Length: 113
Image (cartoon, rainbow, N blue to C red; front, top):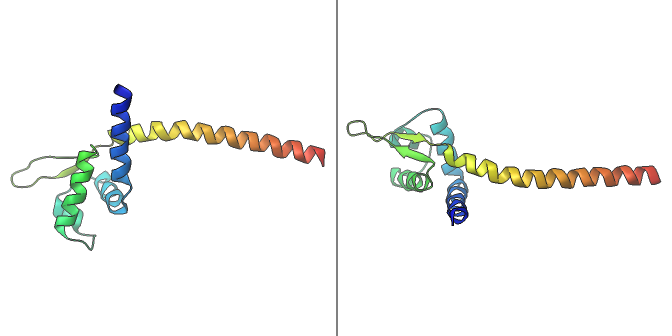
């Protein structure tokens, strides 16, 4: 049951990361918290579109929103990215094993020729 919850969270995180605008927003928030207007400055899209991207990132747990008077600054929460890194690491091991096998095969062929 717990594993299924992790997969669902991973799906949400990967879905959120699939969009280049959302990745750029995360890169901006890695520099420090920002308001929606500050986040929207470099993008040629509406504030409403930025807000929709922020909602996706918030739902995936990648950002949090605080409250400072009428402002709701956004902050990066990198914890879900750790789960992605763990998942990717498993497949990195797979590819490293494949590369090792390929290396051994190439050495064997070179010796035979």
